[in-house]
Amino acid sequence: MISEHSRPLGVISIGVPYFGVARAQAHLIATRAFLASHFALTGPSAPVTDRAALQAATEELRRAGIAGLLLQIGTFPDGEAPAYLAEHLRVPIIVHSLPEDRLDTAVELNSLCGANLTTFTLTALEHRYVHAHGDPTEPGVQATLLSQARAVMALAELRALSMALIGYRAPGFYPCVFDELLLRRQLGLRIEHVGLNEVAEALRTAPPKPLPVREFPTTAGGRLSADAVAAMERYYGAISSVLARTGARVVAIKDWPELFDLDSPGGFWPVLGWVADDGPIVAPEGDVHGAVTMALQASLTGNRPFFADVSAWDDATSTLTLWHYGGAPSLARDPDEIRYGPEGREVQFTLRPGPATLVRLGLHRGALRLLAVAVNVEDEPVTLRRAGARVRTLHTPAGEVIRRILDEGWEHHSSLVHGDIMPELRAVSRLSGIPLMAL
Image 1 (cartoon, helix red, strand yellow):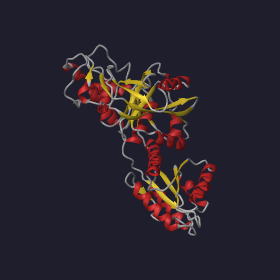
Image 2: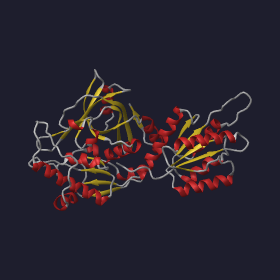
Image 3: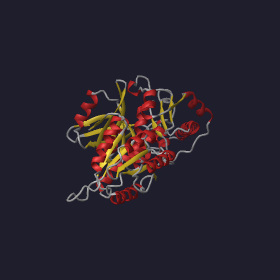
């Protein structure tokens, strides 16, 4: 898995001294108390209401290397403050406006109007932002702020990623093509290219690595041979050593045809799942955008994603059938149900049930785009020789999901992660400028 966020979230409240600064202070204290249970925070503990304090706070935030800024409009602000922060910090901004407690005799904060001024300024400066409104002690407001902050942190995490492409893409898999400089320009991703010759050399020289399981029941009812287990240990040691050398936390690997051997016992594909459970994000078939999709999902949720094909749908149940190799065994609904192909080249299990989101970062006409489908993984056994699941679509009928995917020429790989991350993905879309098709 990718690492915990190391950069803090900046928090600042701005205003002017002739509105309700004491009330703004109470809101800032409540906001910081809530966010501190999720992120490392930095920034002034009192509202900033003059130019000197703004300059000092901005320098403090800049030195801290913040991933993003929660800009709370404590009261109507000096109109120069939002522009100053945006131009000097150059990070994504969450604009948070506050409600009026009462409107019978006066407007105490005028925060909403200040947010309107702020969002106009940021738009004119072409500075990316999201916005939220409400009392920071209310659960709904907290959920919105949390999803927006997670989006900010995930985008910062992508910029800090060490990513490797081992080989290129599987032959004929045109949906796995990518624009390396577009990814670097828009998401800050840098890719290290690693030759498949390094894997071949590691298979020759790296020591075998003991497998994390000791029992290998097969789909046919027997057990894997000792030769098959030994071959998998050799693959496991080789891939682990290559990743250790690169230091990559996210990997796309061209695993076939070079690493797929029908004539020998043991297989490479089960090893990809064990490697994924060791921590790295692993996308097979050289699918770089698939790997980036998985990295984004992992950062937003802390969960391991599942690289998948959508192979069928059912109108009556509004379900999609997902399957693929390389899935992390920790995703299995029951470890006792895991079975291996007779020669050890495949591993079969059903994903655990629960709410989830199917996502794809795609490339279309020279630009990036995002697809997201809200689903629930059904508690239904799937026995398709690989990891699999049937997922029920929650907002769009399954047949309509497939029609949109085919009509609009989306890539044939997607990635499933447990958890509803639609709010986070909407924020990611706004902050990155990547359009989102949410189904």
